Amino acid sequence: MTEDPYSRNEIWYGSSRVLSSSDLPDGVVINFHARSSGNSVHLAEGARYHNVVVDLGSAIDCVITIGKIRVQFGGVRISFVSNAGRCSTGTFVKIGDDCVFNGAMHIIGPLTAEVGVSIGRDCLFASGISVRGSSHHGLWDLETGSLLNPEVGIDIGDHVWIGDQAVVLNKARIPNGSVVAARSIVNKPFTEAHSLLAGAPAAARRSGVDWTHEFPLDNGAAPRVAPQR
Image (cartoon, rainbow, N blue to C red; front, side, top):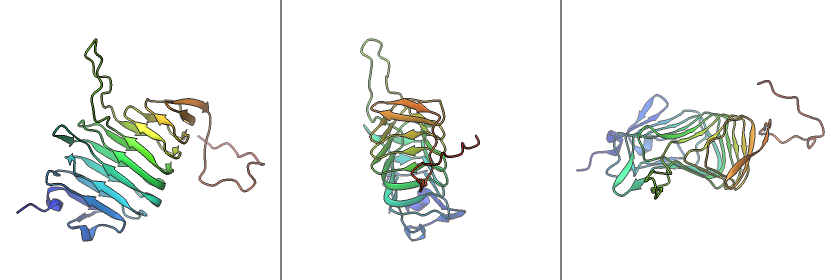
C-alpha cells in the first residue's frame, strides 16, 4: 500500500498542517508522484488563491513558500524538473506577500540543491510569464569543457512589474522597483534598482523609474511627487 503523500510531504496552511486535499484552501491544488517526498509547502492564510497548482511530481526535499498573494486572473503553476532520472532535490521557490497575478504564470524550480527562485513582495505579473530556474540540459564549452549554464538561481526583488509574455531565466536578478517590458527575456543579473529592462535579451533602457498599481486619472498631466526611498 502506497504511503499517503500528505504523510511523506509537509503541507501547511498558515499554522495548520494539511492532512488531505480537502484541507487545502479553495483554489489550491497539489499534485504528487510516488517519488515526491520530504517536500515542504507553506501557504499563507489570507491570500486570494485562484487556480494555484503546486506540482511536486519531480520534487524531493524542496521548499515552496507562497505568501499572501492575489491571483485575479489565469493562475500560477509551480513545478520542478526531472532529467535523466534525476529530480529537483533540496531546491526552493519563494513568493512574497502582496504579489498580484493578472494571468497565467509558470515557475519552474532548479535541479540543484540550495539553489532556488525567490520573488519579493508587492510584485505585479501580467499574463503568459515564464520563470525558469533550470535549462533542463547542459550547455558546454568544447574547448575548456566548462559548463556554460550552471544553475545559480533567480532573484526578483520587491515591487517589480513584469509585462506580458516575459521570460525570466536562470542567472536573472531583477532589482527592487524595476519594470520588465512585455516579451522581454531576462537572462543575467541587473544591479540598479528602479530600472526599465526591455529586449531579448533584456538590457537596461532607463534608470530612475517607478510604477504604481493605479493609472492616473489625469493621464499624467500632474507630475507625481517623487517617492521617498
